[in-house]
Image (cartoon, rainbow, N blue to C red; front, side, top):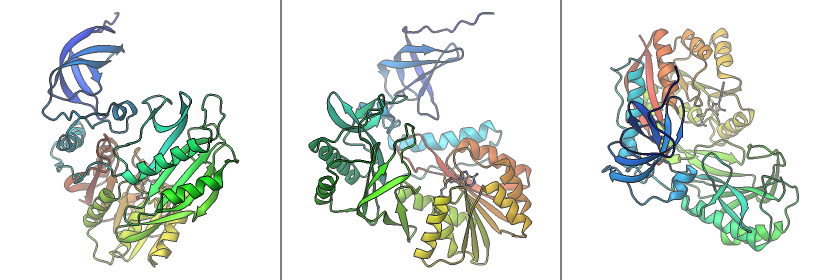
Length: 456
Ligand SMILES: C[S@@+](CC[C@H](N)C(=O)[O-])C[C@H]1O[C@@H](n2cnc3c(N)ncnc32)[C@H](O)[C@@H]1O
């Protein structure tokens, strides 16, 4: 039987928005057929134009608002939605926090775990200007070198000076560098022809230290006027402690190449997190919202209920942020992480802070967990902070075989959190207390949460 959608491309319809997807798109239904619409909020009545029809859904755009949501924020800069920098900025901040709580609740309910309580999302006092790192593409647009952000789903750069969610000092630094590149007639990279010089400008600024690092990513080894450029950058930006030229000749989406040339200062900057000092290189992963990371990790440590006598495993440990923060509350901490460089940083950071009860391994968490178990390690607490895809099932098996009394799960994807919690339940663990969402990325749809699981 041939299927016919109840809507047609380029036709207009009137509908009420009934839901908001995890990507922040409004959902309207016409004869039960879902239409996904950017910049539309639940409760709103809109006239929409259908832009694409697929087999079981369609996309549309708002032509006219007939009734607006009381949660709508109207001072939208179109570049933020165009580029996906702040896809939820049209929703009030309390509305964003409620949306995130609801998303987590809905996923647990869908898995028939209706009795799981999800707390209100812990938000920020100032839910913008929070990012301590920016990486902006550099392109020539209509004969002029520009810095900005990619238009959603494309590689077209939209020029932007105020990135809204970044530390304003970083935004200022990007404009300084952009203006100097223009002044010294340094070419922007051209992606189509793979010619030109400067591909990206990356800036990091320590939240507490205010130390700044500027990384200029180039296609070529040669960067003309580099001495003049460095001199002017340091003059205009006294916080700069490191200027690096990173050479990335490869035609890929990977941001940084292998070669770094330190043109000014050190190869690293420092910042503090959880009262500890961290050394951060251009290549290190470092949490981008330090204020909320401290909240999230403090909660995770609270949920670990440590008395100082425990063996703790920190799986997926990155540069050891959780391991090092937990060390003073535990007897011994064992960290595992797949990226070699992150573990080198973790070891350096342990030394820098005089912490000697932490041992770091480079391995897949699932493999190392098995090895530790076979070697007789009995962790009292296992803490996990996996990437979006969640835990490997083998990790869950090895972790529960080791029978820790509690497991603390820090998650950046509630869908995989729910899946993994179900697996832990099958292995004799249950949730203790509520799921706590923490808003690490205001104005975006990302959701972080933390839960504790204890042995039945
Ligand atoms: C969400 S981050 C955790 C960050 C860390 N807690 C921190 O604050 O720096 C997830 C980490 O898991 C690592 N990872 C991904 N897959 C892994 C695996 N199979 N085994 C171990 N680590 C893995 C990633 O390299 C990344 O550092």
